[in-house]
Amino acid sequence: MQFVPWQNVADWHCKACGYCCKLYSVVLSFPEWLNITQTFGTETTIAIIDRFFIKRVNDGDCAFLCSDSKNYYCGLQNMKPDACKIWPFKILSESKYGEANQAAYDYRGVRFYIYADTMCSGLRYGTPTWEFRNLKIKEFTELALGLRQDQCKTTRTVNYGSQQQWGRRLFQ
Image (cartoon, rainbow, N blue to C red; front, side, top):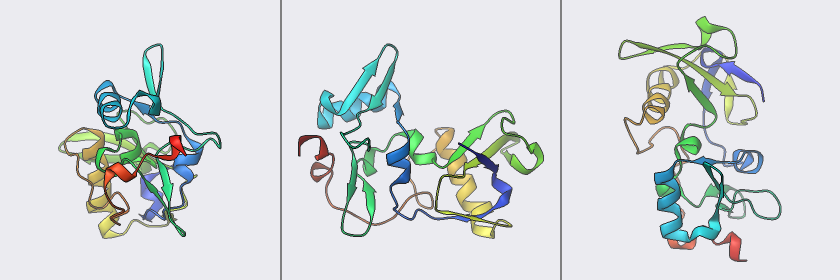
């Protein structure tokens, strides 16, 4: 994994490529785990000592990664875990990956350090656009801080049907 400061990113748009769901395991909080297991059953998750994860299917993908003929999408869109909501960004209280000045972001008088995972194909590098700087980074920060749950600018906005149709890959 390599990370770049957010100020080196011109913009970000989800390309529905599915890489995030293919490359990374999702750690769940207890409330997220409870919500998922109540809806889809405990067989959709894994519990290891003091952590909960979304189960991965035989090919290594997230169990809730779905696809149509062209795009991938999240089967948990309406109950997506926080880790998934803020990916490909990391919002930290301290500079961790260098270039602190380029990673710094002040939100309501508090300084955060925001980095983007370079594995994401939706990143466009350069000088941040107005929308990215003022809307998307703010939304990612609010999601990370738990100040909002709904995503407007930080997710793919296509409606893929009811949640009961999602999360069925485990049983195919």
